[in-house]
Image (cartoon, rainbow, N blue to C red; front, side, top):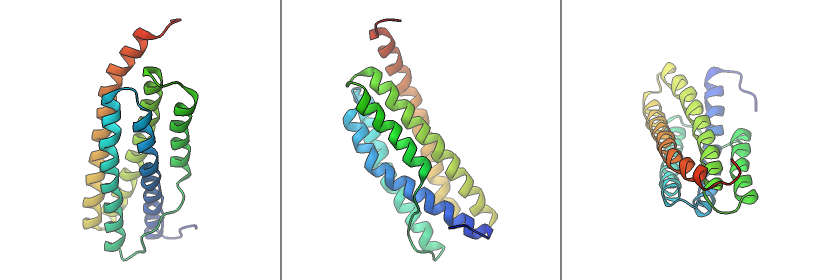
Length: 167
């Protein structure tokens, strides 16, 4: 559905993010289960709990805007989730697969940071202050998750590099 107004575009963007978060609710348990590193597994599990809250915040945003709670297929997230699934399917459990899972997860986080930053800016411009507060809270959490993934990646990357033959 094409948006012909700024507000209409804002709603379409929210629908896209809502669907993206719903896709993550399905992908994160699989990524946690496939993780070799306990820290990475715990990180995915924690982010799953946060993602449930992100979905609830988006549902609250729709209600505040007097819009129906519904998503539209987020093709970008679909592709990013598929990359994570490929990492699981193509690699044996271990640190190298964890490195690939972290990369896939960080691409997801960067997409979410960009998406939430966009809708937050739009919400502020339209003076949807209650909605902006919800979006900003999620944006901050997405940034924190990205930083946590970076910290875990340093440890996992070092360990995977040390154990990998054929350097």
